[in-house]
Image (cartoon, rainbow, N blue to C red; front, side, top):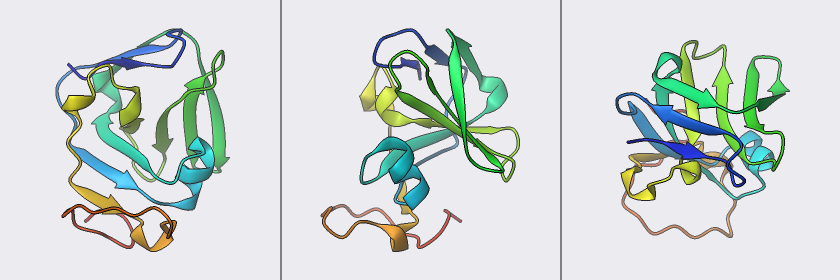
Length: 129
């Protein structure tokens, strides 16, 4: 299923069920938190996720907590009071990357212009509708 881990394996997660959304995010906050030009993530209910191993947290803004491995530094997920009960997990941390099926680009207005993407996915300047 939708199981994954950090780079060193100290933090692992298991998802019960399936995600309800999968997108590529181009916002500045996600870029800076991950050091990459965009972040691919999927959304699940927090109750769907079970973690093994010690996660660390960084509050990138007053309403946001980003979870990561304190040993190797791999970013794992995003949680916000804006979407209580949800968790957004970074798709690249999945054990089986073929499970990730993105449906859109979000925060397209904030994209880096040197990243050239040639797909047919819808592009939203803000959040997905």
